[in-house]
Image 1: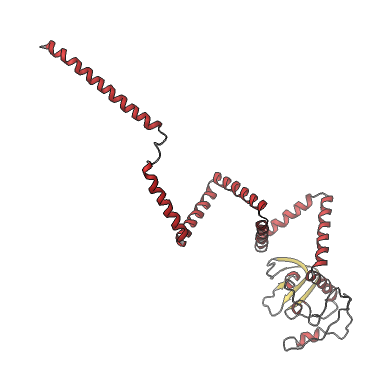
Image 2: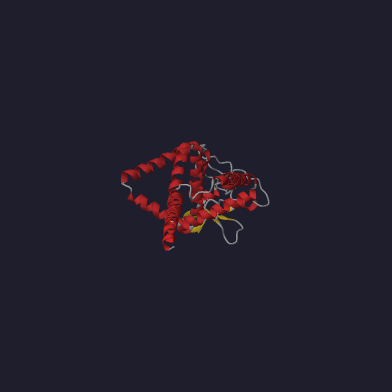
Length: 296
């Protein structure tokens, strides 16, 4: 009996062992295929169409929903600001990419180049007027650069500036009149009783520091000629450039001298002034009895 049991039990154990080994091999092969498959970390192919439909719906909403578009743009800006401030690698890549795009656009688009220069100049001027620390830093940088230039280069820059001013003086009528009027005022304010409708002129022997209230400045300057605004409390001053920025003879020229054209060869003398209630006294002061003038 024992011999029969032993005889028929041996094949059963062998079959079980063979089955276990075969099961192990199947599981090991499937595991290897799953590890080495390039599609193991991707979504199944059946999910591609719903994903595409979702993208199309999002793009359609972005194009037709202003509130949604503004929300997405705000999120992108916030994300960019956060990464730009906290991720040095992102900041470096963004600067390189932006610089490359800007150089390519400037080189290929002259109109954009002109707009970029104008926008940059407007930004620098606005910051120069409003930020005293930036203004001092800018002036110090210019002085340092100028000091490092060799005499030949410095003389060449001065000559270029002189040529530019001569060309502008010859071709720009307003620039010429503005420049000649300033020179005439510096010579004649001490000897003539000149009056303006909106300002009073103050000519000092030395440069005086004042805050210019003009729209083109808005910061402190040291000048000899200042135009003080009438009826202003506290006193407000304009530099000559801001005062003469709007070239209106009735505003820029003294009362009685609105007819003057510098460079015409005529002697600068006061002309007839239409009297009104506001400028009656000022016009009498602007027409002295000695009508001797300076040849323009």
